[in-house]
Length: 549
Ligand code: ATP
Ligand code: MG
Ligand code: MG
Image 1 (tube, rainbow, N blue to C red):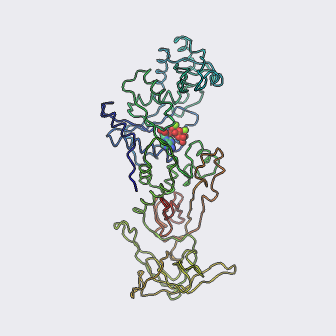
Image 2: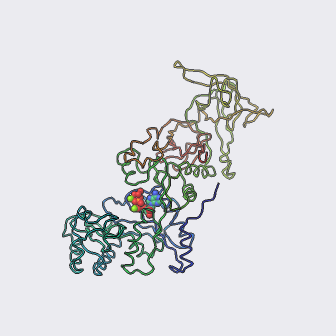
Image 3: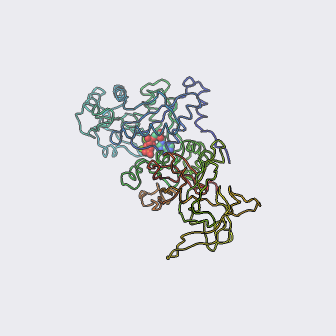
């Protein structure tokens, strides 16, 4: 497969360094708003920002962009810290909150007013929209534009002091009402919102807009490269205008890249919240969600997500990445690290007629053929086993390599077994498979070297532990659910199937979070609901890889 080129952003940084900008320093930041849980799209930004800082020996800040009090919550702050750390990144001392800068931001706004570069506007949103014009038609002027700096400052102080209702006034930059870039037509910098903030409480009733706050946050922290998603490209002239108007030396530069979209899922926090609130999924960490905590619970590893982010690359062209690539990455990693265990998801009894009733023995099974150091374990074996219902056919097609009357198969790690037939219940449902084993084949091969066509997995009926297994499929049944406002109509009704399974004793006792390959079935992760008495496993991915197929 082709190597993914380096992020184009590194070329830009190389050029800055060659030109001596920022004294060669590289400071980036990951700036989530604490209004939801992080998703795989954020992982792309985290890997890029932290990865870039690491590459240049710089630093990356974790900054909570908490300037919209309505939707923000400490629960989100905590989850974001946990998820960034889980993904494998460390901000060290560099944890910041935009809300810590409110006083400094306010001072910057006052400075702009004094310079005649900002004014208080009394128009409501509809009135301002009416005078704003269109990209091809110049706008008119808000009355506030001609007010003196002193009067504007006095009004702005009253806004802060809480003398006005929500929406009575806004502070606007005084830029250019005929700019073809609508973001430069006197954009709002501050709004009145009588809302408590999760960190500053009721200290403020005016809050800065994203456009005003973000560049200041970057500048205050000495960020050099402010990497953000493509939709902010049209905001860049405003970002630069503000930093210049406030006379920052060595202002940070904004560089945009294409956001990650992933097939069969949605990425908007607002929509994810809708699914959570309406109980359409089992919380933010539902294993079907693209949230980092959901992916973690599903059994995705930080390594596999990092690999995925590297493989999709960083460009300026938005596309939709195939979820099969993410699944390929986790398969690849789990193949190397996951212990193998035996489990049967749709159990049917198999009786070995020539094996003594009360006897039992153990066989040695390799824990991970990819990792010799993982050792072996004993698996108990007895006269009655569970095998998969689908591994038996009374009258199979030619290519069938499993159990049918008269065929011999290998019971994984144990012995060769010849099937004689099956017993059915009154409804005609398969009840029991019968046959005999070759005592000479203990360990899995016959002394005469004869070959068998297939190998099947099994669990001793006497020793196996009942388990709940959750089989997940795509949350949506169309590749691009986000394209539809009614995205919820595309929810896949079969995205979760719960089955009663049996697992070998070594599998049952595993700690929550443990990754396991159930042989022939797929990769699974022990759920947080799991206990040794009633284990619960989430299927991360089936074994079969569809990437590139
Ligand atoms: P959403 O659109 O899901 O609400 P957001 O961009 O509003 O996401 P923020 O908390 O502001 O969420 O995001 C923090 C950082 O993560 C931002 O720099 C943003 O550009 C980046 N980011 C968010 N979504 C994606 C994505 N799908 N791909 C790449 N980066 C993303
Ligand atoms: Mg945002
Ligand atoms: Mg958002």
